[in-house]
Amino acid sequence: MKRSAFLSLALAVAVGIWMFSGALNGSARLKSPVPETKKVQPMKVSVMDLEVDRVTREIVVQGQLEPKRSVHIRAQTGGQVVAVPVPKGAPVKVGELLVQLAEEDRRAQIARAQAEMTSQRLQVTGQRTLKQQGLQAETQLKSAEATLAAVSAELERLRLDLSHTRITAPFDGVLEKRTVEIGSFVDRGDEVAEMVENAELLAVAQIPQQSARWLELGQSVRVRLLDGREAGGKITYVASVAEPQARSFRIEAGVANADGAFPAGVSAELHIAVAEEPAHFLSPAALTLDDQGRVGIKTVAEGNAVAFHPVTLVRTQTDGVWVAGLPERVRVIVQGQSFVVPGEVVEPIAEATL
Image (cartoon, rainbow, N blue to C red):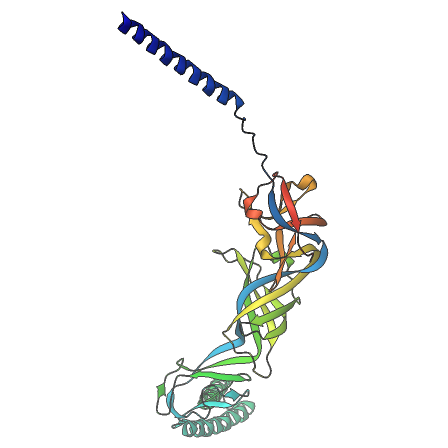
């Protein structure tokens, strides 16, 4: 009996302890503070205040310098080369001898033809005298005159053939290439040399079809070489038909080169001023793309909300770019624009104004 009472008392104590601990835990839970939701802070971005300015729009394209004229000179008669007085790369004047062919018996043939023509003239004179006296038929006189004309034509051909043994420069320029040497034999039509005119060069480029409407003959062009040298020129040709593959138009601009300072065949950058218009000047790093792939600028508008403005490039410089499409006064995001979206509220931090 005592043992049962002892067990009952122990059980009652255990239950009491359990209930008391639950009460304490519940009280602790009631007293623990409820965590508050933290307020999200706006993204900090660097901004720069810009104002519109006027700038000259430029079309800038890559091209090259070409000779104004380049001619492959060919022999107009056959013969052996006996003299090549001008070395490759030398400047030459119009009419200067480039290649001399052997005359061979050409002068003898000319002398024979001259003698034959003299004889035939005498025959024609005699035939006319007899015709006037009624001792000669008209047909015989006409036959003699025809023979004289044939002999005269042959004499002229022989003289021309002799002149063709002297192959001369067709214009002032540079002997760029010579394909024959002394002892070479050439036939009529064979190439013997190549000449270029470099006193004036052509700056040549392909203009995109969307820019072709800005161009006209006589327009000024600034040509810049890769080594930094520059030259001025004017547009002398604008193609009226686009290239079928690139849909671009060929342009040519004449560039004075009397001293030969600019070599032909080198790459060149053509700058063509076409119009003056309002634009903003900023760093290319401020440019970004929207979801549609448009190039634009992110700005901070009223209420510090981000806005996106599509822009077009007006002009590029080594220290920045000019763009059109922004409001006259605008606060441009220059750092952090990649981490914010249009409509998002940000905390702008001003940088120096350009």
